[in-house]
Image (cartoon, rainbow, N blue to C red; front, side, top):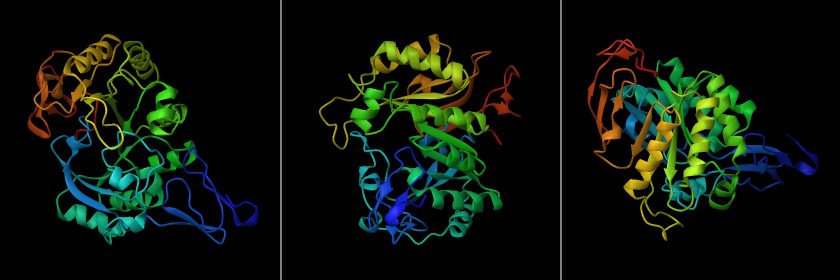
Length: 328
């Protein structure tokens, strides 16, 4: 939105930065040039890899396939525990970038046999235009698109984006506004609103909850969050409770104890979440997907490796009941 004195108001994310001439917004990859807002993160990703879809993690979306994963510099959060801070807290001129316009992203993904393109590592909301154009090019080429995001995005651009996306994984930081403000430099409500919007737009949704010892592992908050998810997103929404490792500016805390993860997992299941997982603990029994009806393992996993899939036409290969997800 153009304002007086060549100022620009950015409407992509809830920060709604008002940016003066020759200045940048919070994310650092869009610049006001004489009253025209220019993205500096288009066609120049700083990371490009062909990852297992399980690494995102997405467990109910084309399991066992590869996802061509790209990122551009910048973020609208500053999480103290960020594992990709060298991307998220950098500017486009500070990273080593590739020349990859959207049509080349789609053709390269097809060439290497990727079933999807993932916008990931950093925060794709801040390279919105590039993501949108890549997703449109991918759809035209018959390739799916998945967004791996913090969910800090305004409703109008999110709805438009959902028309090009096939799945979204939201990093659900905590169920308290205090955690978002103090640990991530953001707020909770826009993320809740975004998740509801994604569900309404009928895009496949999974959540990751990084369990940070002493900061977001309170049983009361976990119960409240699980109840909110069941009520607003549905009991079949997969939720990954993952182990924290000291990173970036939060190195004073230990890795998440396994008993904490298992306590939280049990609370989530008790409150009605049918597909809860424990992540960043390779080999844990909760990594695999089990049919909620017969209890049999329909997808066997160890880390990012899928050893067997017993889902046929979206149904359990043992009892024939439907398993929610995108399987083909």
